[in-house]
Image 1 (cartoon, rainbow, N blue to C red):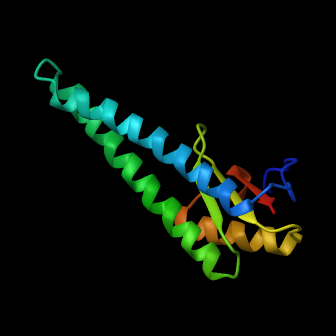
Image 2: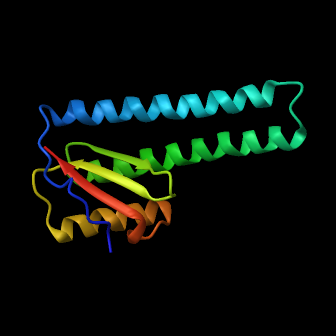
Length: 131
């Protein structure tokens, strides 16, 4: 079961701008996380374990970004004007698409795409629509 939330059919002044802002926020967050890891990796006083852990985090961030980009592309290829995807703090995925209303079958189709691209099951997904 996909997480129910109250973000279906949320009106924005400009939905494309809303998604662009979400992308910028995601990029700033990821860049900050990666930069913090690079400080550890480049610090001669960091232990090998700290450097390894920091490198694993950088690799994980890169992998998450690739999955998010792939999911967004597939969703857009299905006729949605735009989509935004982000892993949440709990390992789930939040998906926002531009659509005024979504049927249960449309939400399920998006969940199928997300599962195929990420391996994450629908109970760890949140699908929102904005317009």
